[in-house]
Amino acid sequence: MELKDSIALIIASYGALLSTFLGIKAYINGRQNLKFMHEYDLKEQNMHIIITNPSTKSIDIINGKYFIGVTKKSQVLNIKLPTTIEPQQSLVVKIDLKNKDKYFEKVDKFIFTSSLNKEFYYQMKNNILGDLRQHLSIVKIEQCFFTLETMSDNMDEVIHSSQKVLQEAEIKSQNIDNFITEAEEMISKESNKYEETNTNPQAV
Image (cartoon, rainbow, N blue to C red):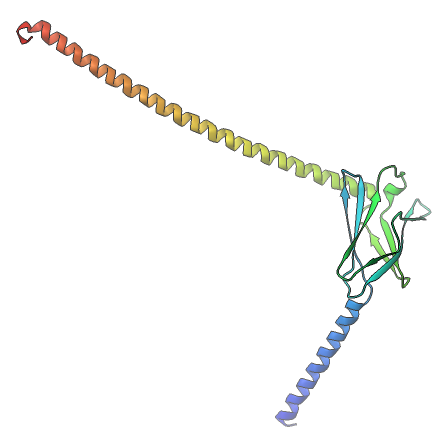
């Protein structure tokens, strides 16, 4: 095989591989896919499930549910449906935690269904009660660190102020020492003059 034919074969193979790669990437980006995360609004006592659509096509959510109890009885989420999540956009599902029963506290999985009847599972690492306790402990630790940091800043201000006061006091003390030294020298001179005058009256 000549060099020209080898180069042509390499270029053709590279083109085929690139085309295949782009095709697979387009398929992956084009298929329905959702990413989940959650956070808590302690002030409003809400749980927020954030659903992100990383694909290149919009996804219509027609149902959201979870399971409670040992029997895993299905419960529908009280959210406005259907709703559309555009590509590269997110949907925030707010779940009111007030007045929820003890069974809801043990929920650890949510299922959302698209208009194409595809189910998307959000499996939490812990149930809501355990996860919320962990979140509260982290918040308390952050508040403690913030308090310590604030105390440290205040302590720095106190130390700085104390150092400034000490410096001013030291300057005043030095001024007093200088004044006393000058006064002593003046008294000494006057005393010497008085002694000379009394010892040698003719010098007057």
